[in-house]
Image (cartoon, rainbow, N blue to C red):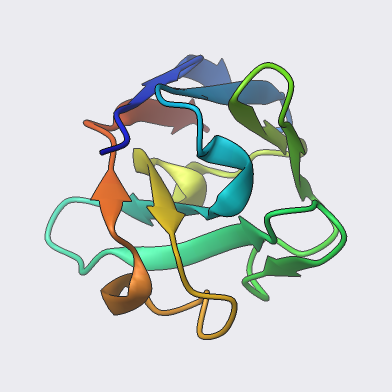
Length: 124
């Protein structure tokens, strides 16, 4: 069992930055790939970024590539999402998720555990 708790969301102006954190419980954090997803009102949950268990491989949605960076610290059981050059269309609830899979990390169906989400609002 893995419990995930996100933090770091908030209100920021367009062009600003935020760093989301996701703290995981349990001793097996380093065996999970981790991902960030987001869901805006009236829209489906969408993939944002993912990172392999070792941190050696990262994946990004085209809409955030070059602006967002995912990283992890296995010693701290934490995964991060650094978000720069934020746009109003980035406004959403952001969810952290853990996956036992090594493939299909852009697909939310392959994730086993989810956090409760943190709100990110970008004003224009």
